[in-house]
Image (cartoon, rainbow, N blue to C red):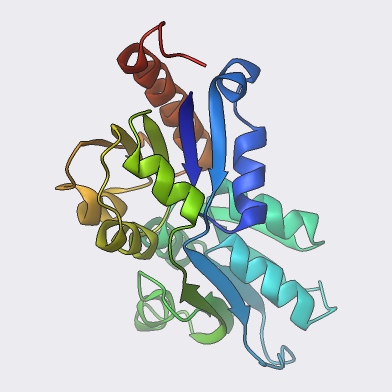
Length: 242
């Protein structure tokens, strides 16, 4: 059977796999091996002088929602998944772009009430606060969680050492780098990266194929994973399927 290797934190991986079609879910064995663990920091939030929040990941939404009971401020988010996560937590959230660059471009045109506060992890791309402040929209940032690197699980390592195809969606450059540094796949490996920046660390891995999603969002990643699973089925062949 084809293995679907999920390297995001458990909750995010579960959300992704439940959106796959029944046909694809029945065709894969899902292996959960998170390569990042989210560690909230002891960061009391004082939002009294802030007019709006910026979230660039659903991890930021989850941690911020635990740090404060306030839901009065508008939120500007990167991507549909982050926006939906913020709405589930009770925030008034606007999807302001598909990545940091389009978010900052949107906000510099929209000019919402400022100052804004970007709540983010220890590792973040795009220099959101600096870009907005340089454009005249006063924005500060606060690191509210740390992303701790984790090793591959024994189940994941065993699958990669085997002969059945492995399909791997990659959502962040840091996760991609961690995977590339640890994995020496023997199995045929089919990867889809959220963006070219995510793709770069894994481009030269052996026994592998890597593509970039057509858009940097969950729906495009799901579509690409389903396409790669079907390709992997052809590699595996009917005699080895299931």
